[in-house]
Length: 228
Image (cartoon, rainbow, N blue to C red):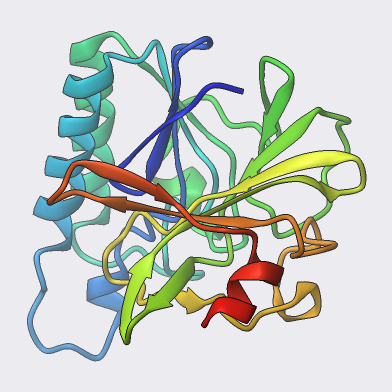
């Protein structure tokens, strides 16, 4: 499946679909920080840049659109409204596949919702539960992967063939910058929360370097571990 990685999201040109995961809207208000840390402006600005860059026909959120399980912190409805407006103004359809954090989703979202959303031969879902649909591959979030390179932690994608049964897997990093990420360098399948990670041997970390405008693909985790 042809794909373009950009700013913690992935664009699938054959389908005209942009996929991102784990926005965790409201995380700053749910934290112990005394001041908001610019979540609203960061999420909306980066989202709008992705729309401008790719002009997708649809945008799919692979779960954990919201952060809080039981409340709607200040600013959440405003952020959701601006994301919806940005899609409407560019002609993109916004779809949400709920994640384990999205218990309050109905309070702010009245658009299309699917537990599993098919994009060509692939299925987008959050990844916290095993999917019911058979697919050539799955695009998920949930685990917030990151990789440590020479002491610096960077958000990363994980991509590999035959990771969930015979199906391929693409795991996205958290779109929110407020999630530090879970370091995958030494992780095996049993360490992941997602049941779709049955093996880590073929999973290749992919890191987007925005300064150099490069996408760096590293060896699969089983080989990468030996190189560190």
